[in-house]
Image 1 (cartoon, one colour):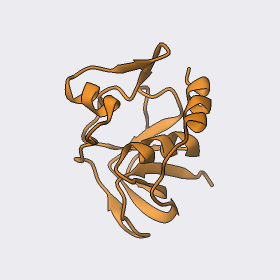
Image 2 (cartoon, helix red, strand yellow; image 1 turned 135 degrees about the vertical axis):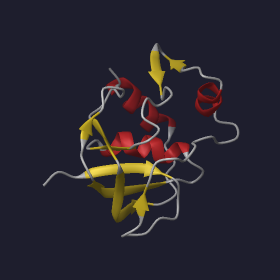
Image 3 (cartoon, one colour; image 1 turned 180 degrees about the vertical axis):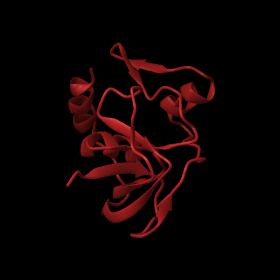
Image 4 (cartoon, one colour; image 1 turned 60 degrees about the horizontal axis):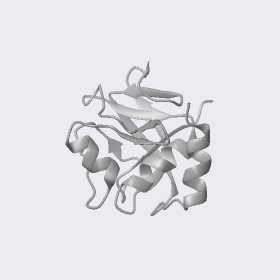
Length: 129
């Protein structure tokens, strides 16, 4: 059985539905500011979180650390194990294995209030293609 992850806004519980339509803009976040201006932040030559091509879909991944990265971008965001709702379509936008779905249902809350250390961010960046 494939384990899917989603990192995002805090406070969801098992059984809750994650649907498209949210914004990921956090005050003081350079990545968020770039996205809001229609730009993509480059870190060591890597494009970090470009604007999504599918705002009508929810993104899920099998890479737990990549989902943790997104949870850390939300204000005290959470990491969720999720199950897809509807068709699962591969995404070509991300450097890690990701899919888009109409919605995702929270199976469990894996980690609350995710924050990444600089070392964790560097390790993830080193894996970034």
